[in-house]
Image (cartoon, rainbow, N blue to C red; front, side, top):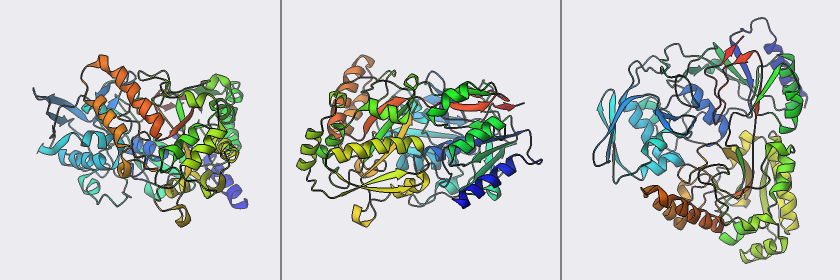
Length: 519
């Protein structure tokens, strides 16, 4: 405890020091940045780091349409099998080297193996080829109407130098060289405390206005300092005192207090909201069977979760039975009836049918994510009501993010359950919803496995008649409530908060730091 308090004092001391520049944006982020490879993990802090440091070929605008970002022009062959892309002139990496088509091809190849949305596209790609230093093409095996959507969604490929992107797929990338609007200052990185980014002076932004994740990414501050302060009360005090500028994920019970402060702005930047989810490990019993996972479904009371996680009923939906977000084009409640009312007798029976016999069930409890901890507390109580022998293993979120990648059995350091959230446009389709992917060993941690669900997703992706999409989505969701890649426990909204000395904060599916000016 004394070490934590000392860290906080030292951090706040640096914030108020005379050397701090008025052009420095100081943000307290939701987790400690430990992993620098955005193809290695789905954790949000690394994805948000990616958008600071790297750039993308396409990005979504506020209407969820893919817009060119690094790409200047592109063509599609008459048979819809060849996409040819030409890069914008003047793109350079942080080390001064020009961005080339070879860099893009290598980055795409890594992404198409390692990341869920890339894997979707990769199933349709026969080859990715360099045409000349600024031009490359994707040749498809069959027509696929979502090529640009995959390249523009928020979990798209970040463009890296070829020598980095070509590293063995089983090796994490540890270098931080992109071509984005900010560059990481590695000599100032203090894991556990701070990560620092400086304006990339060589960045050439697009001429269009910034819109969501698209348009001109103009860095209007000299530096962005990410601070990791686990204690939310300390962060709130620092924000109110002007010692920091931006609170990325304030606890939701702080929202009303912050709205009453005339010096602060509270903004919901993600209009689609956040979906909470319980992720079972499909490798370990009892969740290696459909019945084991269905037992979780029979324990769910979304209102109980939302009261614990959010509290303020203006910030959550009373019930959402949609895997692909309520209020999205793919909303449906097909198959969600078991979540309407908990049935613990049924949950016990399903666990027994799945072979559960009072073995320890390891749940991963985060110590530094209050909302996740609140949801996990509800889940633990529900598991115990269903007769489960719960083994609570606590750690900070970054440590859990490493632990959850372990495939070993529970007795060898593995796990059974953890809780996380996701949101935004990448969740609203079965093609880009990372946690929904049920590709077995190729799926995200938890390794959901259902070939029939993947077959139905493939039918939807190949369908060119939009009038058939609704019925296909309903068939996908009906199947998903049988195999349960995850259990959605509610949909809510996570505002950010910042000092009114900041202007130009964008609405987007994640906090972005371009376009922001500091008075």
